Length: 356
Ligand SMILES: *Cc1c(COP(=O)(O)O)cnc(C)c1O
Image (cartoon, protein in one colour):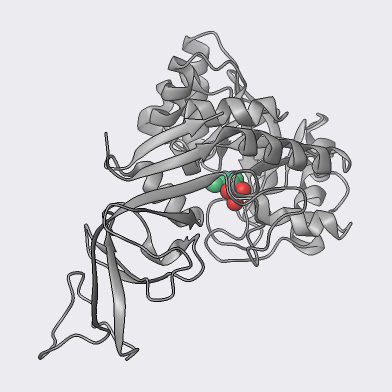
């Protein structure tokens, strides 16, 4: 197959995982590797596990099925709140899930009893990001209800930050999580195995030695896959940022103006693009587009080449200052941010080439 392809460097993913695991373990925190950014690709999960993650977190049943069918034997954690209609499959496929709704937890418990299994529940607390989780004043009451159910075990409390509201993990919001966990342990007379303090965005707090004592688990995708933290997207020490590289082919190259000629209406996606007049430039078109990838989240590896824009199937580059002059049939390579990686992994038109 000769189309665009995504190179996936598994050794980089493994060494990134190991760097994060080593860093977190020095703070007594275990790392669960999150593979949802690459559609649960089994090779990626294996690389993360070889780097020492304790288990795999996934947001979709289809992805976990892929991992199980590939023979990956690791504890699995469901990240997205389970759908009640999928309760049976969730219990079958996952050892634990993040939850906030007692009705869903009851359904999981019923399925687990029918299967003579015990399903782990991490109760999610909304500490301010306003995505999933119980409001703090409801946590104690819900924990008590879970404790009364057979088939599920309350294994911990968790929170998620920086995803919807962009709220930065802090001593205050994660401190609240720890405080609630301790309160529940006292009230119920049980020990909670996990206090799950978020995702990649918690790493900087840890690095500044301000992670509240008691947080003992993080669910990490981006820092392992991308080698960046997710608050300012700066490279994380000891990791590499080039685990994923996208390659596309030049299908036209010509010297043309930088501003379109003629009366202008909407572009193909309903926008009204603006154009900077750079005079006559060398324009290259490559064989990927908005159907395949989040174009704004790509950077060309040749720093002299900039991305001008894209339609569904064509991406247009300014190759005037290319360090490596481009010609028809050449391959152009791009670094991908998290969003571009996610979309490229999801596009059936981009071949995935995992390489050791
Ligand atoms: C996606 C997700 C993660 C991983 O987030 P990263 O920023 O990629 O580390 C962790 N927890 C939950 C609940 C998630 O949905």
